[in-house]
Length: 485
Image 1 (cartoon, helix red, strand yellow):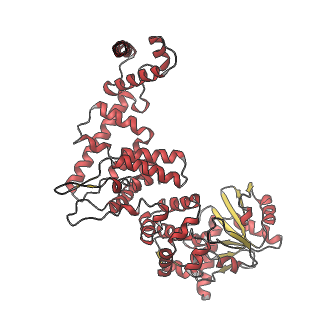
Image 2: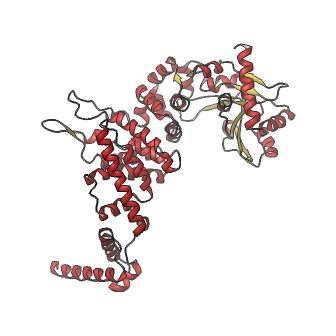
Image 3: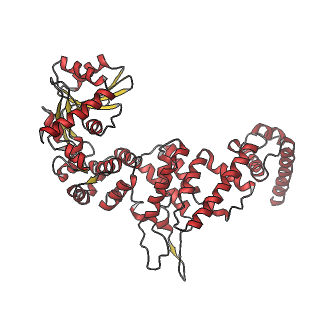
């Protein structure tokens, strides 16, 4: 690498570091005072050069982990060593979080999910084991003048917006197969192109991803999905065959379209819905994982429910039900938390509800049930339903949008009148037991279900009317039971 490029990388990284992370120089001084080398490394160097450095900083050092821990304890507000077996100590001071890792090399055995980590002797060896050249740069902070270290010409690849590996791609992905997903993720985050050797290795080695734990796969998938352009990464995972091993429901959306074009490209439709859902995330307060998962997965029930209709056409009856079940199963396999799983399952199950009401002829009862079933996910359902319109027919799109505008207006109106978000039966369980003279039992639940149905159908009844309806229901039920005996 030329001195001009080296100086450029150093100046860009150093200027951003001084501006955005003034505590870094203080920490470097502490390591230098103990006789150790200390360098900003990896992603933060890349981001510093791109002018997007955050408050999470990664450093590398020749100090062993216990020595790093001692130094960090004197510098930081909090220190934790959960990654100490891999040479990493983490700490936080003010708004800055740092991870300090001892020079190391690591690789996976053929069938192991855990890397074999060995500590190294120099920073060049440490950089050589990193995933991509754009992450294999360092800014040495304990030299008289900060030294920019770039043995694999990462700054040139950064300028060319290309993702390459320091060693051969095959060797790199053999050392850590998760790097194949990281390649797709960085392509999405940075809008970069993968080197042909990287793509070829991903295709040839896609099956190696199966040795990586579900949690690590999930975390990488989430980072890609939450990137500015997830289409890039998803397409790479599908085209290279990696998706077949981590989320096979997505490549299965590439249904064969017959010569009569009986249905639209479900895969392309799903990616478009995802992109359209992302454009509406201001309604959700910003980038939202549940929104993106639901948009991507909303039609995964279609391959299993596809049925050709005699005389032409195709149907996907109950694909929302099948899709909700498949989404739940896949997200559980990827070790997502229960709250996320339940939310995505609900949204996939409900994504067709709007289309079941024709041209917007919604009764108050239907509106109440829509709100009740969506619950706290009502705004998510609004976003998903609107995003699910990908027709190129402008008039049809405008009509659907207008109808949904009407539905949201109806919901707002009923919300104001009835507090739909807090919808409850007009009587509670204690009142039911007192009126019917019964103890806690299944009958109490059935009575409350009856009252809730009344509330949904007719709106607030008031205590007196609800009591009257309850007593009539109870009497009729008792009479029916006697006849059946």
